[in-house]
Length: 403
Image 1 (cartoon, rainbow, N blue to C red):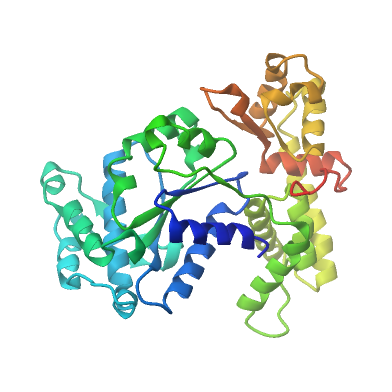
Image 2 (image 1 turned 60 degrees about the horizontal axis):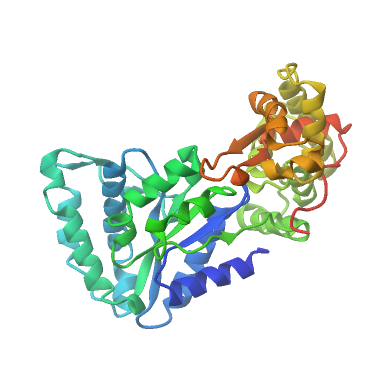
């Protein structure tokens, strides 16, 4: 909803480009959901034709420092995806390997607790990888690659689509880049698999700019927050999808969620978390009622949350508060190159107030050591709630960043 342009760009990428796609945007903006929706739409559309079929890999992956185990986890998820979508692949005219052979590998002593819980990108796999030398030499990876080459003999035959998410968890762009470069000739070269790399502002752009990754990963698709006009409709559709009875009243209705979305700095992930936490609080208080009373209780809950966070930030000095308020007014994101706009003579002069805000968990920064201009500072979930209280519980956190 509200992301049709980005979905179409991903579809064009999978249909005509050999590079892996990448997606970049603020934390919680909905990057992973966007890719998931795009992949499932592509699968649904491609199932009506013979040949170029797009199928999502069952797991979402996050880069870890143990790249060898990461690589095995990827191959195991691919094997499970082949089993799960055997019928779809055959119906689309693809040559599928002997599924019993795949199951034999997955049930080998070197892989314990095999199986999937759930489905789709959110599936949880219960496989633990045995990284002993015996398993490393077993040829499992080679078998997976062979199966893929049989299913997708050419780039026009289709592919599995996987997500490597939260690149910012590597803490620095240099570390994220190092890990991706190490995977260049392994995971990023698996035949029949197209990856989408997702990360917060700056981290993806810096990582894919590596000389070793040129030609492997495309420039990131920028994902902005969902437009204000679409938020209520998104929530209304969710309510309609999960409502068990016609008269059921959601603890947070579309208007309430629209309010939460603005309070949370238009961060979709944090907005849904706030809605969930408030719903639990409302149940514990046995205070659920009609839409009007629930909205009143929501304001009480927001005030309690903001008070809890602000009580722990006495170390923030007036100059840091002034920077914080200005940052909120500008939409919640800045870089060192914005120092003049905040009244500082240099990026270095702005660093100490930023550090105080970081220590108070009001903002967080993503660092690019190779280019400090790409260091991005953003208001945290706690910070947006504190800002709401500082404003006298009015929405003064600036215009919609998409406008």
